[in-house]
Length: 400
Image (cartoon, rainbow, N blue to C red):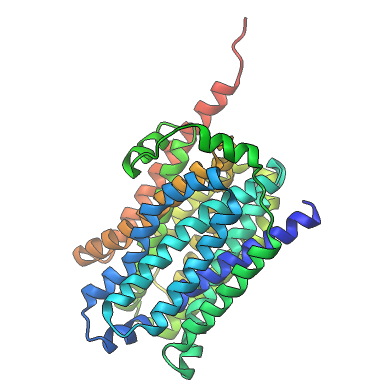
């Protein structure tokens, strides 16, 4: 990858790192905000889900606008909206303003993520694309890992202070994107998309159309993967507390260590693994490996076995996510914006559904979420193997 393109990639990494840092920042502070406003646990759940809802609703629109008006404008709009959302959260004097902040933050992420993935597709060759996707995924993971710890430290200077810091960093990223990040989509292509006369489809129709595309199966895998991750994370602390008596310090250590190892794998080893095995084979290996890790976590009888299984799960899913993103990008052709928007939409849907289902299953029996998650991943592995063989057969020309 050229040095100039690497510099652009670093700016994108900074943008998404700041957004994920801001999302992670709020996790340890949310109960304090809820207590401050005298709200219930149900309200807390709605507040967490709010950003996922707007991210889901705006992702298809954002993907389409990325193809019509350019990647750069959507990136600036997304990171700028996130900066404003953080300021609103810091200044909020009433509960409804917290919801406005979360809704606006979700919309900002919806505009940022598809444009960012499309931008990476523009500046990388097919050979280097997995490396670019891996670095972006590593920046996302690192932001989310550092966020909670940073929030817990910065709150010592005031409850609103972490959000001022997050908003300030987002403003810096907005200015950098405005003056340093060039547009990668030509005016001719943007004009062609705008003149095509295609009316914007409703979200449901766009998702239906996406499920008829060549990369439909991969979008289903995006949903399954993020559903599995959210299913795991939503009940992990409750599960290890109930079953193994983990302290909050134990839980924080396991999650942070596992996430950091996942970040390292994404940043350093992903390109090498992709070149060695290819995206399809890598996808199959990580799907069945993730299922095995969930089973081991469920059967584990000691702290270190749980720790090891959690590390393996996070490491494998950190490889799986960019591998799927790369395959979608390669199959999207000239619809990079639409494909990235649909990718984000299916991910957002999983981020809403995953925690809700995990909580319901946990109330029935604490073992069910992991057993269910493992079963879904095994079925996905079998489907992925069949999909890969079908694609391979279709690629072989018929003998005359």
